[in-house]
Image 1 (cartoon, rainbow over the protein chains, first blue to last red):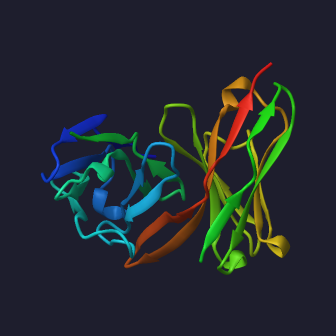
Image 2: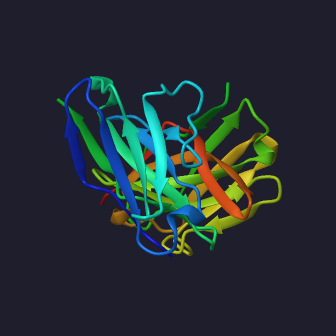
Amino acid sequence: NFMLTQPHSVSESPGKTVTISCTRSSGSIASNYVHWYQQRPGSSPTTVIYEDNQRPSGVPDRFSGSIDSSSNSASLTISGLKTEDEADYYCQSFDSNNVVVFGGGTKLSVL
Amino acid sequence: EVQLVQSGAEVKKPGESLKISCKGSGYSFSNSWIGWVRQMPGKGLEWMGIVYPGDSDTRYSPSFQGQVTISADKSISTAYLQWSSLKASDTAMYHCARGVYGGNSGKYYYYMDVWGKGTTVTVSS
């Protein structure tokens, strides 16, 4: 199995753009789709990106996802930051043994 | 509207058994995977396992295999997570989530598109 590593925390000001990385420890990041979840304090997670770069209906286009084979990582980018974006964000993938793998989560502070 | 409604908070003693539930509505329960995710206090998400209610096919995380039992009753659109002997370290929030499984061009995926509100389990003597 592989691991997904995320920065513990990131912070940025309202209106700015922030990128959260998710690095795969072994195997190619491109070999399995990456998905992203937002968890606001006291709430359950919600999906913000699925299949690398697809947005569920209702998720603003300020949220975007991508993968970079050169760094073997996926990224979640949030532009035009709002205070309501302050949350924990988790990346997730699925390995060849049918095991779901989560990243450790990144706490986004908007201040 | 697709919804997952989880059972209420539980307070148990070490060694006791427990079964928590997650009832789906607004979609074909039998034809979608449903799974469980643990979140210990102040910690991240940990995938525990999934079940396909249509045929009860079950997959476990190696970390949770043998520690819990995941099941589903398609007749009442409900999935379950159970323990036979709780430990203090089982204290956590447990989320159920509907899973989307698929693949194209040899690239497979599983992600969770709808989540329940979580069930808090506290195990303390």
